Length: 153
Image (cartoon, rainbow, N blue to C red; front, side, top):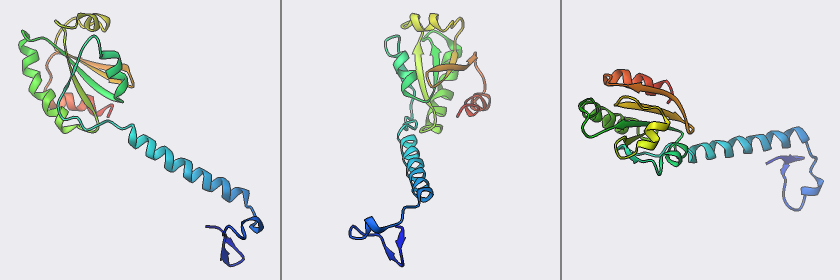
C-alpha cells in the first residue's frame, strides 16, 4: 500500500492521497505480468503419461489443443513401428507435462497421412501450436529422438 504522510491509505483518506502516475503504472504492469504468468501456467501441457489416440476426425483439434505434440504415424503390420513404440511410450512418460505424444494408425486414418505426405512409416510429426515444425522418418535410437523433442520443448 502507498503511504500518506506516514500512514497507510484507507477508504477515509483515499481522496487526499497524492497520485503518483508512474507508481500506478508500475503497479499495473506488475499485476499484468502476474496475470500473464498465471494464464501461461493454465495453458501449459497437461501431464499425459501415455500416447493418446489420434484420428482423421480429431487430428486438427488435437494438435491445436496441445502446445507441443509428437504424433507417431504407424501401422500394426509395420515391424519398425513396433520397434519404436516402446521408445514413444517411454518418452511420453518422461516428458509428461512438457510434450504430448500421440499415435495415428495410418491404415485406419489415411486422410491425415495423405495430407501430411506420410510416405513411409514410422513417421513422427513434431507439431508446435498446430503446425508441423519437424518430422522423423524411420527408427532412431531414443537419445536421437530425445534430442529432436528437446529442440522444441
